[in-house]
Length: 110
Image (cartoon, rainbow, N blue to C red; front, top):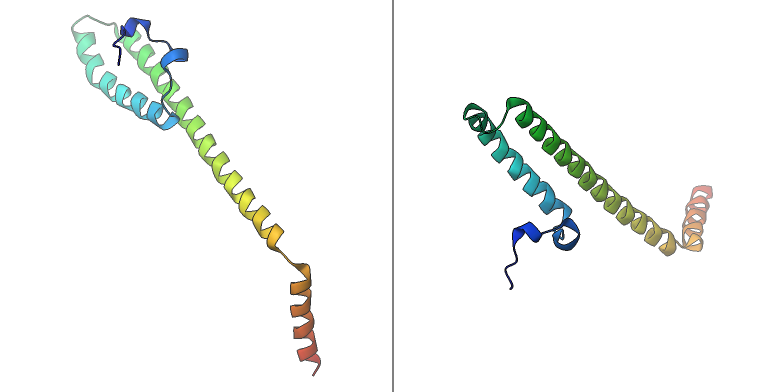
């Protein structure tokens, strides 16, 4: 594996993580930022306003990814459910069910 400089990393070339992996990474990074921003502000490395704005944008991005992951999961479940319904409809034999209904009706008449 060739080790290329991280400065050369781009989303289009290297952004191949799954949605779940991206959510996990943004969550991990948010936890890191929550721990270090107060220290950085007290050390003068970052203003409180910049820290707040960066964390707000980061958490917004995380929320958008979580929402996208939820929508993707729901779409998968709907597609699976539709496939189940389609399979059930294809297996349905109206003659078989009609004969059973007629048998029950005949038994009721006797």
